[in-house]
Length: 297
Image 1 (cartoon, rainbow, N blue to C red):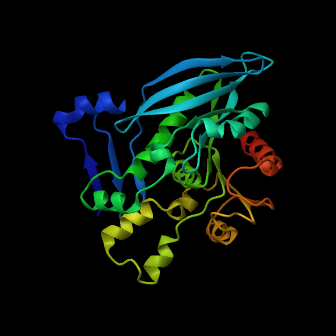
Image 2 (cartoon, rainbow, N blue to C red):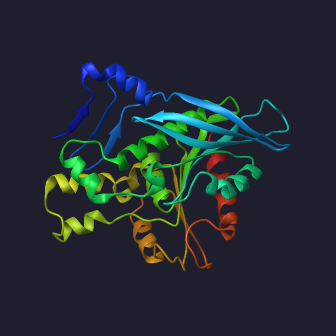
């Protein structure tokens, strides 16, 4: 049975003010643990921060699920000012700010891609027990809201006149990679996803072994597990990039998620010790992004 959590009629006006979404906005998790949101129109504001020869940097503030989300929008200049460029939603790992994602954003800008990097709620950190408790009491978990934030960021990106709305995707690192996978599964307008230094939680294995038995707990854990959504991304491209010497998320864990993916996919490895994006990943990013965006008619 599908459970929906609908904003009450007498709160609709307040909800619109807080979320920037249409009234009747709903979120739901079905019996298989698949999260769904109705499409919404985020209210946003841009503030020019920097203008250079080859790019423009804006501060972004937009509304999503009762919160104001801040981001940085980096737009490359083109030789022909009328050209539209692809856009990428950048989701940082836990503790990493939107400013901390600008090294990668700058590299992408040099390739001709716009990006929007956001400060995720709790800076990407999660409270698994708190979210579970809230879910069991019919409250919207923060991790679900973080997926919605990513979806809103994509909508803001596509609203920009210099962005080609048909050529956008999600790119996330570590915890941000998990949200990027889920968001790309829910967002059918996205061309694909690039997941760096991340993996799923393997909830289905825990269920199969009897570690988790309660149906409502299973629904929650599956709803926040990227592994639940892997096959929803096909036939769009799924790219994973990981260091075999990752110090936080093991390469074996990334492989386990990769093996579950159906449809077009690639897994690239680097040798550098550490976690998250590094310059050694640039050749893979360049090639994969060119391939993904070139296939859009």
